[in-house]
Image (cartoon, rainbow, N blue to C red; front, side, top):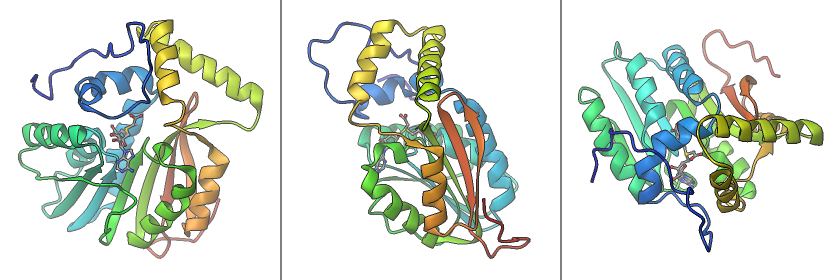
Length: 259
Ligand code: GEK
């Protein structure tokens, strides 16, 4: 097996496949994942970079952080690198794919020997959440059945300490069909520019069809509000990918403003 940190090019959909199975986060995907996500998700590296910056603002000494749908721990890594000044810190990286969790553990041990991270192979809908200061849920909610999204956000809100933050990133669609179509097409152009062929793009789209279901930004903001967040804001958009920051009121300097 290659080292989890050596880059492997994603060519999973480069040959015509007779029968397209639904996309799953198995060993094959875990092996090429860093290359796949970098070439497929516009703004991925900017969001990861900001995850670390956001963590510096919301995580105190002795704080606890969850990274939900952690895959290979890229968000965890960004956060840990920004919090080296904190001696006591608990980071829990959760994913329900065994292939991802095993690789994640190996990778984090290799790259972050000084900061142990707990990796946990579990479904984020059934985890027993402990009080925490920051929750990262980057490109994961979109894989849950839509009816499970609000109950999960309610749970996450309950687990956050007052003043804690939730960073949610997602692929989105738009209420205006022309905007949806244009940004959808530009996203395909983005993938083509990153070396994916039309066949790869179309086969992956088919494999993801029933697995990844998007919401609009308005739906996300409404859910965050319903969960109880006193403030939430879409701080980032790159084509049809967006990121939201939601704060649980009651922390220092909180003015209970809502958007
Ligand atoms: C990153 N956040 O690199 N419970 C736990 N994990 C789940 C569940 C679930 N119910 N459903 C899906 N996953 C990462 C990228 S990838 C995004 C996240 C993408 C996991 C799934 O196994 C996969 O590893 C991850 O969510 C989504 O910052 O591939 O587009």
